[in-house]
Image 1 (cartoon, rainbow, N blue to C red):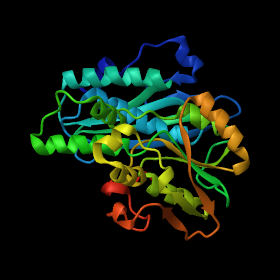
Image 2 (cartoon, rainbow, N blue to C red; image 1 turned 60 degrees about the vertical axis):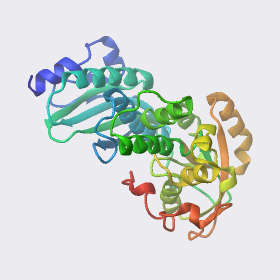
Image 3 (tube, one colour; image 1 turned 90 degrees about the horizontal axis):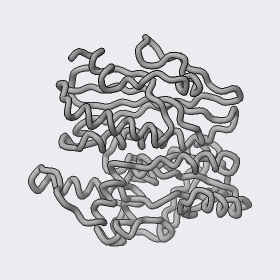
Amino acid sequence: MDEFELISHYFTPPNSEADIDRGVYAGIGDDCAVLSVPPGYQLVVSTDSLVVGTHFFANSPADDLAWRLLGASVSDLAAMGAIPAWISLAITMPEVDHDWLSLFSSALHDACNEYGIQLIGGDTTRGSLSLTATVHGWVPAGMALMRSGAKVGDLLCVSGTLGDSRGGLYLLEQQTQDDGSAMDSVSSDAQYLLDRFYRPEPRIALGEALIDTATACIDISDGLLGDVEHLLKASKVGVEINADCLPYSAALGRLVGNKQAISWALTGGEDFELCFTINPTNELKLQSIRHETGLPIRVVGSITSDPNDRVVRGIDAEALSGYRHFSQPANGRPSKE
């Protein structure tokens, strides 16, 4: 099976009038996709890659990788307040593995349906396994959420719980160190943390709801401290974070204890929750957004006037070992900046 047969067999969706309605004039099968952005909207675009040995283990299930790739990529759209529209996909693999491709492409189709995003093209080539997604979304003109809008006195907020993905990675690391095989059976806590690692849930509805409320926004991929650093630099402000307010799951607390859970909530990375700032006068609006989205949202700090402020209260420096002065990506992971 050559490249074109592979694409046709596994990744070409049936043509339909719905494709035209979504702004896809030409998709898979031409040299380029031809797309139309709705009037009054701007296009937002982001690219993410997953590489074997760097972002996932070689024995990672193909269906989980599809969900992880889509979740991580669409999370960038959510951080801008964008509506997901299209995705292009590049796959590099050492050989054609039909079982792997069947599982991956089926899960990719399900994930695209879940997030309301359409596959419009891509590329395949031979080499070490890597997956690259470029996602496109729409946002009302001039309304995209940015990293650069945080103001002095704003509240720093996060959605969901933090550190869970790092807990899932810890479980996978332990299993790999033991015998290198996949886990056959796991506890409900372990399964929850593994799902948070492999199947992140991009906060699309929250991003859209924050368009006229948040002053700045970013998704949490490099760890809370790493991503807050990006936001602070863009906004030219400082921050005080209260570690006692950090949200982490009961499953993570039971796995590693509260102290480690707080540390991973700060530095763990790849939770793909949203971190955003709001003016304190919008706290009532924030309560409404909590109700509308059904998501827990926690105020974890505040923005200060000194651009050099990097204050984390309620935790000792030992708990943040390996994380120097807010400046390096958590756990040595490459930054998504």
